[in-house]
Image (cartoon, rainbow over all chains, first blue to last red; front, top):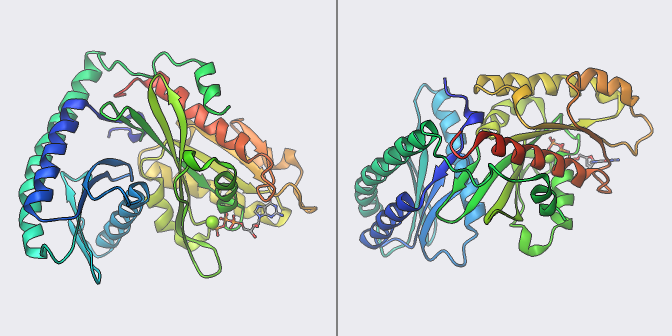
Amino acid sequence: MLHPQQTSFVMYDEEFQRISVVIEKLLRESNAKVIFLVDKNGQLIAGCGETEHLDTTSLASLTAGNIAATGGLAKLIGEKEFSILFHEGEKDNIHISIVAQRVILVVIFDHRSSLGLVRLRVKKASEELAKIFQDLAVKTAEMEKTGNADSPFAEITDDDIDNLFS
Amino acid sequence: MSFINYASREINCKIVYYGPGLCGKTTNLQFVYQKTAPDAKGKMISLATETERTLFFDFLPLALGEIRGFKTRFHLYTVPGQVFYDASRKLILKGVDGVVFVADSQEERLDANIESMENLKVNLEEQGYELEKLPFVIQYNKQDLPNCSPLEELRELLNPNNVLEFTACAQTGEGVFETLKAVAKLILLELKKGGAGA
Ligand SMILES: Nc1nc2c(ncn2[C@@H]2O[C@H](COP(=O)(O)OP(=O)(O)OP(=O)(O)O)[C@@H](O)[C@H]2O)c(=O)[nH]1
Ligand SMILES: [Mg+2]
């Protein structure tokens, strides 16, 4: 088994651009307000739409908590996971789904869209996103193997670290 | 699991505060929140019961500044310490980069500390982590109270591997930042060792 503590999740420019294209298309085609992608550990990966007045960091953390909790519930009743969650509000609704077993896709929409439309578009976008994350995993593994990882942290000094806290 | 984003030039790490019920985990985060400049912190989220016991987690995002052009962010989480919330604790440990064990130094909480430390090890192992290999520090909290166990005893029972340890009074903030800095530093050193994808 892979030791989780030894693995960083790495995002490169190229894949980030490809992801952005997919979620922006999803935003348009589903008439959604906001879309964001969150790592299962609660880190925000990308977002688009009306995100300015949204606390996306908190949203990311709570979304991951939500997925983790429902995932725990699923196991208790013998399911692998619940791949889709839907929360209906008075004005806004949240559609949460898991892509490629590791990232969470969140779509916030109001009356200008519908659950049916969101579901349909999310399905297509998920396939595209899954492919990108697959490529990303391959790339990360290759970088690691060839020692080409080029970590920005390989050369940090104690001073760099101490300066963070000054 | 740290998240290194070359596109936005950010690095995110997750720190979990662990320890028995009422040991002062939430109080640690509250103090950090109060003392951090507004532009360096996000909202603190507390999912708590009506009596302010942590129900799922507290969450506090901190932006510490830049290292080599990368924005360095730490996401601080606390677990619920009460024994029966074990399922939630396991979830919060997922993807952890560093752990702070907050011990309640009061004599009558000695067993609770030991039990919680055991629980931490078991829950980490379940997910393929080893406490010995993780950035890990211990805080002996509530040093202001009169009924504390002697430090030697706490050390012997809770810190056999001699990891970095701090005495604290989270209520007044004594030792809080020292603890946080120490674990953050260990995490960054770990990243330095590991390289980007390792
Ligand atoms: N005297 C004293 N009291 C403290 C100290 N730190 C925390 N407390 C108090 O201890 C109580 C519990 O603190 P919390 O921070 O809520 O404890 P917790 O570890 O988050 O507890 P759970 O959420 O149940 O796991 C509160 O009333 C705090 O004010 C300390 O250093 N000294
Ligand atoms: Mg608490």
